[in-house]
Amino acid sequence: MEISLKGKTALVCGSSQGLGLAAARELAASGAECILMAKTEAKLQKAVASLDTSAQQQHHYVIADFRDPSWVEQMVNSLTESRTIHILVNNTGGPTPGPILEAKVHAFTDAYNQHLICNHILSQAVIPGMTAAGYGRIINIISTSVKTPLKNLGVSNTTRWAVAAWAKTMANELAPYGITVNNVLPGAMATGRLRAVLKSQAETKSMSEEDVEREWLAEIPMKRFGQPQELGNLVAFLASPAASYITGTNIAVDGGRTPAP
Figure 1 (cartoon, rainbow, N blue to C red):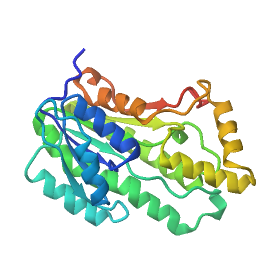
Figure 2: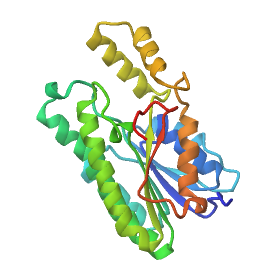
Figure 3: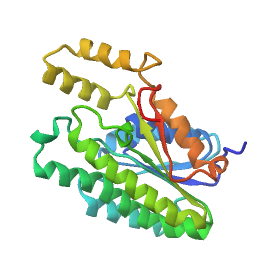
Figure 4: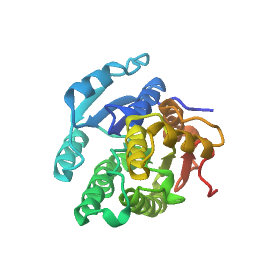
């Protein structure tokens, strides 16, 4: 099975920490040259230094804030002027947890800009190069909420479904050009985002975080939270030649928690 990514360049978004960094590490370990994109330079510098260089590849970073689509557009257009991006990993922080009826209108527009609009801007910029190269992988890290809404994540549920529909539409349009588009759906992964959601639910339910954590673990057949590397492994596979006939899919990495197949 061919999973080598030598000679391929990956742009990995939201990659200074968490799931984005985990994805970048596995892509680099498979031989890809990685360009990390996030908003905090100090974290990006540390993240780049942690990437594998055994294939003699050089890794880079660019600074952009996904709350500002015009900034993201400027950065990605600058990148694509000088190189082909073969692999795009769309990923950024999730919206603030909370019941949907308590969400302000701007929370929805902010989330759409940060997720759907930025994903679209990035994809439009890299697709011409992918088409010319005859090789492209667009991988969106979203959420298992595209299969079933999650409690206390009203804005996130709404936005993630929109991204999934956008991705499936684009997968169908790009398939003839050898470009695949797939969604990776993390469940409860051991990241800072998980701790924030547990804290929010604890406050909503007037419970301790430990009790909420026990409730969550009871719903996961594997009885543990996932490790970021486990999601990164799937991203690296989907980015590889071995996944050339997989497109338009939603693949959960959740220890079996999602009730929908």
